Length: 454
Image 1: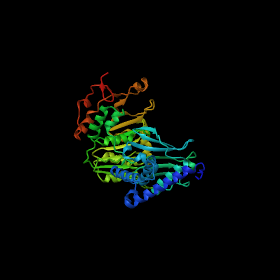
Image 2: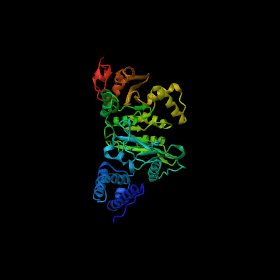
Image 3: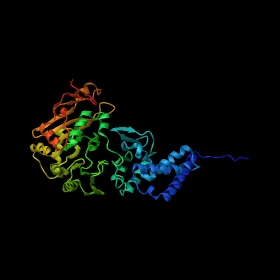
Image 4: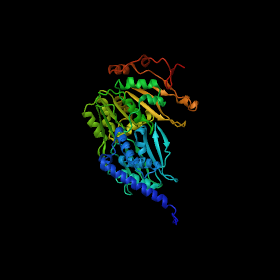
């Protein structure tokens, strides 16, 4: 006689999950004994990640107590444990290297995950967290791994992970709807985007990309890349840096590691040192250190405050080009912000001296923005401005009027003026190739891959 099988609602699913967790523990323990390095840290290059994937897959697929559809989940869970990124491991694989940020947002329907790719935000198709408790445990684990407890007494945590990625977690009473977090992936996992890719994405026309590579980079000009939040400043600067001569001794100073340049073997990265809420080494100290090391090129990550004083000294002393980024939508905005930065450093510049200060720091200013008229919301080169002793001269500008008139269908730039002979001569002296069209424009409108006299 066959006994009747009694199953209480929910028991079966709970048993399946418990069995799966036991298998995960068994496989993970086995792998940690055979390959101790797997669970040592999360700083893994692409080859190591591929080896990790292979080892875990082999160990899981040999289990006879796993259904094929369960094996994939077990593999991803163990890889997540090994890398330190847990359930979000999908966003840190070699195949996902063009993903720049991951966002976890609370909602009435449960936590939602979004990610940034090529300047656009996408909704994850998979549910990574069941509820707010899952997100809380996840963020606490990551934060604790880097020595920054995420608790009710420390409800906002801004921390750097061991591979250079940065997590900003907000929870408890500070975020009443639930834990929210942003992980900005390390540049170690995001190679610089080629400038031709930005042309392909319609961020700027090919002509402007050629001018930047030939004149600003090769000609060793001082340049500031400015724009509002999420306008693509860091991405743009890293793309420009792909044209730096690998032998140039390049120093980079930042608040956090964002501008790693794997193609520059003679490059030194410096970052602020923060312990808890105390800054041990700040940007001003980093800038002074750069100055003392006599670099060929100096790059200062986003200037925000009093580090402007040390940065201005670097700009006037670096022989091979000073680069920086900052928040400013146009020249007037930049002037206002620079005045405030110097004031933060205890220096009150006369407002009529601001133009002279900018002229001493920069040869060119590049302004970026992110349009919101179309669904693509493309990051856009708004203008390239030459800084002259007499003010500012627009070289290339985005044709906002045509863009608005055509409701976003026509994206073109206007070639307003050639670069001054003085600047061209200086950049030619530094090795820049001077093409005829840089000296005397023969066309007015620039499209992605076309020019026209229209």
